[in-house]
Length: 305
Image (cartoon, rainbow, N blue to C red; front, side):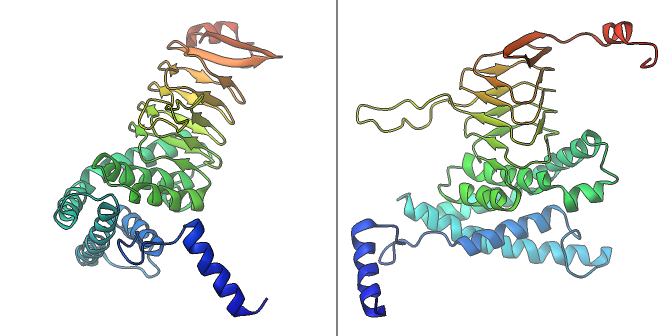
């Protein structure tokens, strides 16, 4: 087909089928700019870890100034685009307010993210150093950017939070919605294939393995058959819970009690109490209290003790 004919067909498709940026009105946020923003955020959170050249301690203040300036300009521009897209009142002023608020949260955010690094180091016997965790563990990138995006999400910024977590999703294979509420010391071992939905709530000191899904049972629909937005659809995970590989936990009214363990490949649509262990025995799902440490020692053979 000649190029002119292809061009004409594409132009007709843009008009008929949509999927084109708002070129005559509000431009949508730039994916490349958002990806660069995500990279700058990681540099600011972990100075010195991702630079191509080394630098001395005396250079850190200048680097922080440079990164804060770059993030300020880029974040303000992309937030304003998102707010204009959503027809927010006075988007320029609102974007400046949001940007200033987010920048002010970085010290608090960094302190929280350090607990995730600590959890990864103590949660994986294969880890040899904190430096290895930061440089080579995908959970650091995906959790750090989710926490950054969550701040934007809570401030009511459309589009941008999901674009930031999608950048992390592409890099790590883990899809963490920016709306999810995640406590301290969060660790995702191996990371790949993990999905955490928008309304999930996760307590402190939770550990997930690869392939875990915290999803929805089904979607409520309105009279026109469209999904109802903003309802609780995803589970709550109590503190000090471990969920093993490829477990699927569904439903907004599903709660995993604190100090529980969910075994690999478990499909769970019901709540379990605190201090429980859940696993398959044959085709049967077993939910039972976890044994106390002293009981485990008493039952162990001599060679274990």
